[in-house]
Image 1: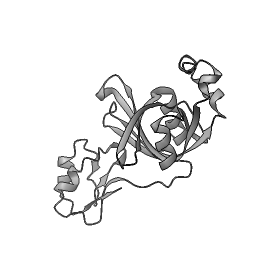
Image 2: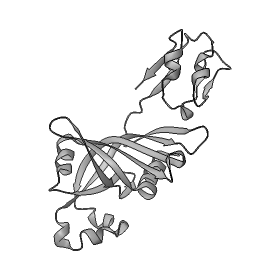
Image 3: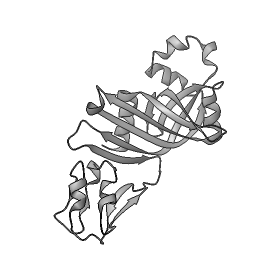
Image 4: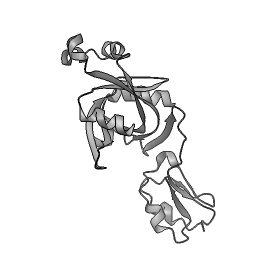
Length: 207
């Protein structure tokens, strides 16, 4: 999938996410926030100006979120994003209410909606993690011009071909037919078992 597909899945399939921001003491604070729309400009959500969540967004300008979709853990896909946010005020409120009509029950008239404001996550990186696939499936993506940073474990030329990494990999996602061996990133759990067992210290962690 492309970045736009992940963002569309976030809005249309997951919708309700757990969002983390940071308070004045440097401590994380979480809130359940609905992601209400997505387009080439990013992901849109709303909040009220009187909330602590609003204050934290304005002060920090960043957030992280995770949402999950599925019947249970082993039949579930998760999507996480961390990125920069900015306030758009009320210009997109009509669009978000049209696409999310349940909001009319919470804020039924123009007077009650006067406290609301719209934010957009306009630049960020994300990770897709699907436990329903065998082996598991993961992918990373960026949007809004964010730089893609490689994360996870990688095998260097110091590999001696002992294959111990493969023996301890729970997903068996290491190609040991070549030297150095190659970790199949799309199936890796990032558990670190290969890093711990490698006698040549040929495995490095990024991110």
